[in-house]
Length: 320
Image (cartoon, helix red, strand yellow):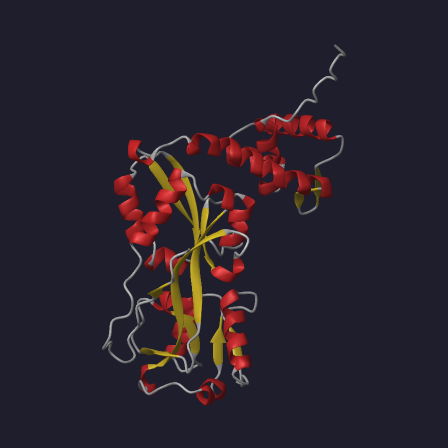
């Protein structure tokens, strides 16, 4: 029989983890401090990986250590390989026998405050050996990007921003018009929206973009616009008569004194969903957490609600 060619040496998981750690931390020293390993260990692992690849995967810049073009391509597969190795053990678990492990969940601050806690409590009672870490989705670059990059296991996202992910619909979070309580609770008009200074989140924010599109589609011209980062600052400015705003209902709870929250002239919602990588959706630990969240969604809005009160968000239709 003819001799077989020698098998090509493949990278180790330790080498791939080192590449990911340095790229995510922005430097060898930073990664060593964050992960509790020596800088020389990381340098050696990355050097061996670069030798296998036959080209540099990282380069130093004044702003820190960043991937080369080849390194960026390698990183995508490195993340997938490291995740797949961990998922091999997660996939072998059985829910009836008890789950264990760690779940990282990215969430908007509003959903982390008002939507997830009942599910987290129920999930902890059912699976005490699973540690769930909540991560600020806005601080980590957005729930969708964090899920794609493997920085989190699940993320609460606005549905249309995660069409490449496996989405489980949660609620339709309605935007409400917010003004000083002295305005009263009579219906809001588009003319009123265009006549007063408007206070919104910064332009890069998805809520800002959604509201601006809504106003443009209904022919509303802004007479003045102020961009504010913090919701609490925006609400304080509104209460002092510096303008009005529109915010998702969940971001308004609890509504501060001196303000009124009312439906917009035409409904505007953000469809919230729980996102996961498609190949990971069937893992028992992720499936169990998703079921816990669905089981503890708020009830639909009740008939006869007081005018000007905050309506309960309506759960989105379940996935087919």
